[in-house]
Image (cartoon, rainbow, N blue to C red; front, side):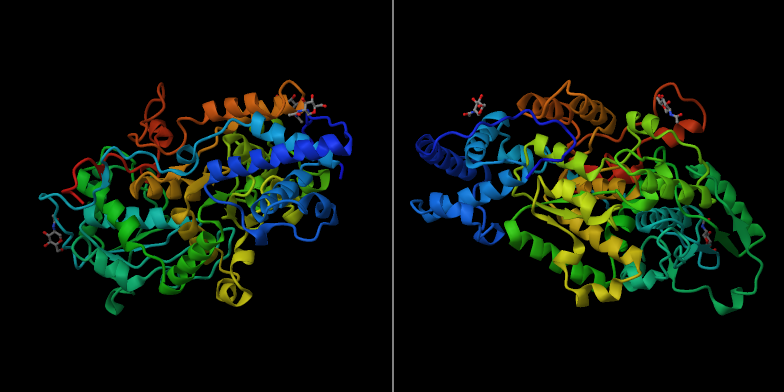
Length: 536
Ligand SMILES: *[C@@H]1O[C@H](CO)[C@@H](O)[C@H](O)[C@H]1NC(C)=O
Ligand SMILES: *[C@@H]1O[C@H](CO)[C@@H](O)[C@H](O)[C@H]1NC(C)=O
Ligand SMILES: *[C@@H]1O[C@H](CO)[C@@H](O)[C@H](O)[C@H]1NC(C)=O
């Protein structure tokens, strides 16, 4: 039962005699049960708990049913933490509740106070629909699911600015996920068209007679503003069709008319609904998760092969794994940076947190070991073995594969974007969303949760955390209440509370500044989140 967790653990235990033990055990039980009820408002379910451990027989005989459940549960968890004996367990249980500062239920699970804020996406009185029925924009959407969703929403706005009819976009089939899904496999196409009918005309396909016409093929500049697209509208003098080769980040985050910004929100949050089969399975899985323990955390554990290879982060990996990732990066043409110093990446806060680091992080924030955690991710690099470093702290880790039946998942197999859509739905509906890395999914989910009422999203300060983790490793800090307090203090203002979108980083001039702005879809406040209820 040796603990092999890498970080040094400060606790040492000396077994005592049986009589002292029994007294200690009784005190502990009373303490543990009151703490459980106080903290979590419910007792853990018997099913979740180790049933036939013979070591439990003797101490359980004289306990009430309720105490037995708690004791078993506590034993399961503390045993996993490497406690060698009963004495150690009893001592450790008491110590655990003394060491970890009690975080109130509201601070763990509650949505941020919204201070009377509401979603607002109605057009203003000045809003004019695009009429350009004889000018068409065709789009090739690029990237993963969320990059495509935000890109498509931008293209709806671009069609309005350019007074054009939008043809249902083609989706990326060449990204890392190699998904052959079409628009209507992922989205409810009819709903998309009708929801936006008062804004932009959208058609399923280019009219036959235009197919052979010459098209202007454009690679629109990134983060472009109104002026750029008004200028581009001159192309209509020579062309009836403009083909857009890439849809990601083609529209600026800021300095656009209010009606354009609200249209982006209508497109993303209302019009781009997932297809009925995805929506219905997503809902079912959310209900299943809720029935398991009421509340759950959706953890976007971006510890996937492509991300590790792309970022060059090899901390905690074997030599062979590091080499595999290096070769993958060498061979991926569109990843420009090939030589990466993993240490510098990690210290700079540019690496996804590892499963083990996420475990320490959530524990330090005060989430109890019984917390249900849904893993909203693709395949974790290193598989079960690496995930077990998180499971040792949080046994109730649930993957898609465990939550859904094989038959339910079968239609989604080999369709990365469709399974990503399931993760998206489950993440939006979770009580708490925690991404281990920034990225399109993390940003899109955070923004949508803000829009829906500032549901709690915890954004790890990766740079700050890595500094703390390194101090644990070198023995300068130990796990416990003071460590927890450091982590909690660091994340006080990173939990999705209402605030306006950040502007560009100071000191950066010219177009480069546009890149440093907070993404519109990460925080659509103030344009799509307002004080007044009227605009809803
Ligand atoms: C647990 O054991 C350690 C080492 O024997 C001791 O110093 C500590 O006071 C004990 N904690 C409790 C809560 O009994
Ligand atoms: C939009 O296009 C329609 C049809 O092509 C045209 O009649 C109308 O004047 C255009 N509107 C603007 C604002 O350019
Ligand atoms: C990576 O960067 C660290 C810190 O700057 C440095 O100590 C180390 O030697 C570098 N490693 C390589 C392989 O360059």
